[in-house]
Image 1 (cartoon, rainbow, N blue to C red):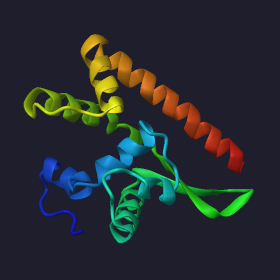
Image 2 (tube, one colour):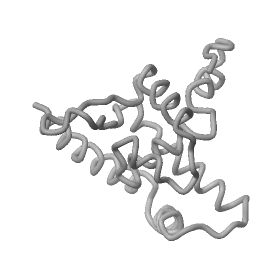
Image 3 (cartoon, rainbow, N blue to C red):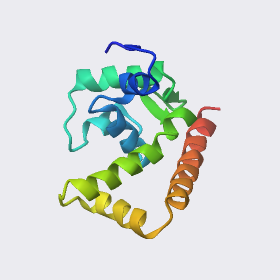
Image 4 (cartoon, one colour):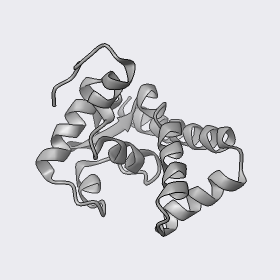
Length: 146
């Protein structure tokens, strides 16, 4: 995927996360708790293995994701969001709200729960809770490799 098509900030961001998979990978990490290639492959969206590998590499290259291996399992790669990757969560929430307002579709139970929360609680509270919870789980991963 070519990057830096122009000096426009939106273009630069879309060069990294504007494909149809990158934000779903980030969603899967923060909302679904996925950490491994195999877990990402089990997503309902059915991403091809080569595309998943490419997107994970791209997100790592742009420091939205990091990867490690656990000391007791040197075979399995564990992917986790950096703070820059976690900063995309409010954008994901806004896209979900836009979808709810404009697409008139029914959503699955997890999406519906998140949308219910987004409609009944202040966004900043939901985002703070989710990012705080994710940071704690990320720290557990990092502690396990120390």
